[in-house]
Structures are given as structure tokens and as C-alpha cells.
Length: 275
Ligand SMILES: [Zn+2]
Ligand SMILES: [Zn+2]
Image (tube, rainbow, N blue to C red; front, top):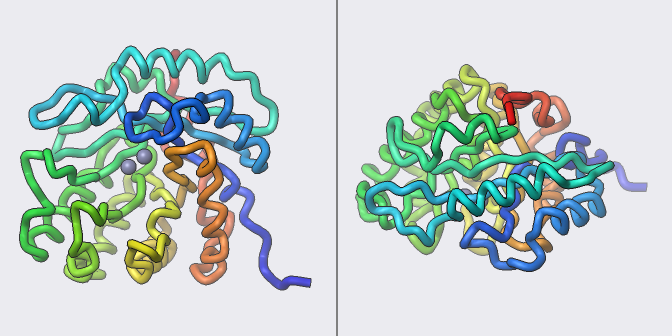
């Protein structure tokens, strides 16, 4: 018999799944909400959060970045009409943080949402081109952006924390080394004080293109600082709905259990949705 601990119950949820309306979704037929929900039920997930990019016009951003507002409203209707039993469907939004008071969200939509997830992507099209800066400057900018996220009032979750796309940041590891432990702890402290959960994301553990040491550092620091974690696979295909379960083996190393994870009702704005 294995002496491995069972997977925490709260880890059997997923707050970060893209539907077919996100342009980055690679599976437009499979990623219809009803299909994603059926797959999640098959994996025994308790909660499934649909979390798309929606295009809100702003200087420098291309329309190809996100779904239109009409598409969002259409998917919202589809999600609200879902019949479910084992897996509870939830509607989120992957909101980009571009700077202080600069988000890819119309606040009027907050009352449509069960929760809001913040992302710091550092797209090359942004006016502040973080990827083109020196390691030290980039690290400072990245930290600054995450501090804005951690202190954002309307947010519930911060997605894929300190994840840097390798195609834009070939020096990601060197940049991470420039983020001091003290600064990382200041970020965690701000997130905890604001009641924001950090996403526990499998993309941080992809050894083929990622700095696994850094992933351990981030989640180890989160645990020691009392920051709650929200599982999110960042699925762009139907087959990735439960991808985060493939990283469950690291939970024991990181000493993470149900006390470290949140379910929907423990998110900061649980129950906010008005319509
Ligand atoms: Zn993202
Ligand atoms: Zn995403």
C-alpha cells in the first residue's frame, strides 16, 4: 500500500479554464462550456471556473488578444443555463493588469461574475515593454506589477504567479533570481492582507521550459506567509481540464493540504454576482 497522502479535496477544483471564445483556445469544438463541465465531472472536480480573456480596447492592445464583449455575454448565458450535479460551474474573467488602475475589464461586468482572476502577462505589445529591459529593471517592473495585482480590491485570484512566457522572456530564470526573497515576501503579505488567493498552476512546473526551483520558492513562500491557493490548470483544450492533478505529487513536498487551498465559498468576493 502506498503511504502517499490522498489529494486534498479542495485541489479537486479548477478556477482557470478557457472556453472556445478565448482566441488562445486551441480546441474550439471541445471547449464549449457544457463539454468542459462534463469532462470535469468525469475527473471528479467539485468546481469548474470558466475564465476567458475578453478584449477591452486600450492603446497598444490587439483585438486578437481576447473575446469580444458580445461573445463573453453569450458564453455567460451558456454557463448560467448549464445543468449540473457533481461539478459546480462558475463564471470568472482573466483580467490583465497593465499598470495602476489599468485592467482589461469593464467594471460593469463585475456583477456578472462569480469571481475575478488577475494576470500579469507582460505582452510585447504593451507600452511598457518589460521583456526588453535589463534583468534588474525587468525584475523590478514585474514585482511592481504583481504588487498592483496583490492590492487590487475587486480581485479574487492571481493567476500563474510570476510565470514569464519563455518566448517573450528567454532570460526568465535570470530575471527570477533578481527578485529577492524579501520582496517576494512583501508581495505575499500584500496578497494575504487583501484576501487574494494565488493560483496553483501546473504551468509553473513544466520542467521542459520552466524554472521548477522558482515554482517551489513561490509556493513555499505562499504557504509560510499564510497566502491561500486556488487550483487552476489554465486549460486551453478540453484535454487539459484536470492538468493540475498531474502536479499533485509536489503537494506533499511543499507541505500543502486542504488548509492551504480555497473552495469557491472562501474566495474574497464569493457570492458577489448580482445577475
Ligand atoms: Zn494567463
Ligand atoms: Zn488563462
